Image 1 (cartoon, rainbow, N blue to C red):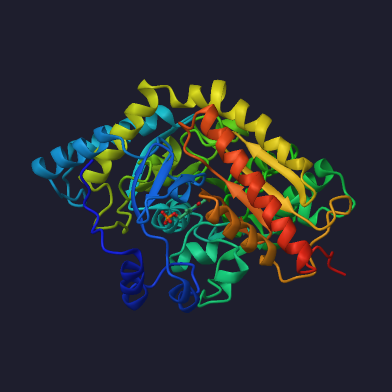
Image 2: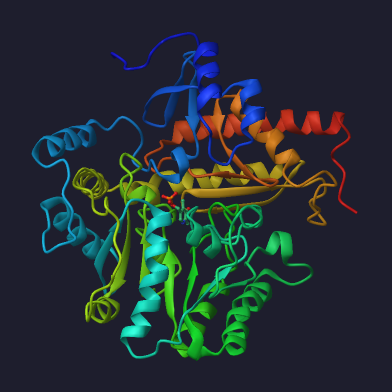
Length: 465
Ligand SMILES: *Cc1c(COP(=O)(O)O)cnc(C)c1O
């Protein structure tokens, strides 16, 4: 295959990268010392780097390349759309065919009466839209005091100022996130880390009822919406106890507040159904989608809203919109991606082949001496690293020390597995095949063994006091 890659020596590429490129969520000076890995091309579930190494991408990029790399259909559609209509907006009484096609397809795929789509260029932007949209909804309904959006600590809703304030990542709140008026956080349903002596079920109920308490304290007349990921992704693939979502749904129903399901990761098959909303039987009023929407081939996101929300928001001008919202090339690529998902029954492959095999093999990691909780929903999984599983102990070392070590060992073994603190997480392309899952597990075991050996040698297998 011919390649666009400039095959200069890796060290030279790394030096140029370090000289001019600031990486997101990275300590850049430290990275500059050791050099970034240069990814040159990809096919299926494998990345290739500038040294010719083949890396199994168990994160599907950033949770997004659901149909795998190298699907030529998407490149062809993008080229065709670029030639036909490379750009036009839908602001001022105009529309275009890719936006029409994609909105219609999303309305068909989305559950219940979620039939209306407002586009953005990614998940953060869509959540910014949602914040203004739910507040404007209540204003148009004559209840302008309903302005507060309730979210959760350790939620991830994006990196724009509003989305990071909406999220609950401590590390982000510590860096230039203003405490935006009208955002309130409650606890997360993370039983392993925070459940204490409670059963997971009791803990799930307790955390759900924090929403009810917050609404009482703030006054239902002041609360616009509750936002949550069906399964927290960037927070560490935190799978909620079975009691959590039914209780949240009850509380939302009884208190006249909108439910926003942030499906940016869970959407499009990740949890084993088209949406996390299906998996947990939730009835959201608004859904945020991005990532798997285009399998990451183009930047695009959207807010999908119910008939009621769309009717109300349509009563007057909603003064909001992004220049690239519903970009024709991105929309055409997303539409083709979803056509492939449907025609090739990718969700069926997850249900019948990939998820059952991964569930069986992923569970084996629980036998490893440093692995505690093992979680998996569909094709998103996590393991908690611990120095002592019986007590669900945290490490005495700084949070993330061992997780980072493990990620480095994965990287060295040509496996992309991410760490969140001392949890290891995966979210492989949905099209992954059983033999590739076996390779994933084999490399993960090697990385865990190497991490365990190094941590033991360095005296780090010590529980926090
Ligand atoms: C990635 C992510 C976002 C942000 O999406 P971007 O496209 O990076 O702006 C929002 N919500 C969730 C749940 C995400 O995982």
